[in-house]
Image (cartoon, rainbow, N blue to C red):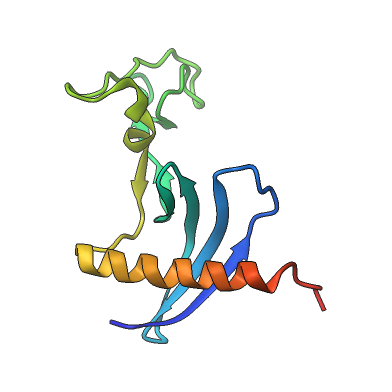
Amino acid sequence: MEITEVRVVLKESPDKKLKAYATVTFDNAFVVRNIKVIEGSSGLFIAMPSRKIKQPCSKCNFKNEMRSKYCNQCGAQLVSVTRPLGQEAGGNAQLEHKDIAHPITQSFREYLQKRVLEAYEQEKTKGPSTGA
């Protein structure tokens, strides 16, 4: 599988960790949008598109976002979900989101990250677009 196009949209606020969003086309046939370029403590990395995990209300079974205190459907108080043993208090973000699409192998993850970060660096050197 080859990456045939990478489009990067820079984010305006330079002080934030989120630097850009990327759209990647594979084999001119499949597109993945909303890949994030993030500034981490050891440099730039990509994060795959994800969605928030939902939990059902014990009373009406409506699916609410994790960490919600009350059901958005019936208003009942929700039981807080405890994290699995061995999980640190700071690791909650990973438990609340699930990737929509992601690479299976480490080699493909590295290839994808390399191509997205190269496109990000190229977009940064172009500067702000004129919108023409």
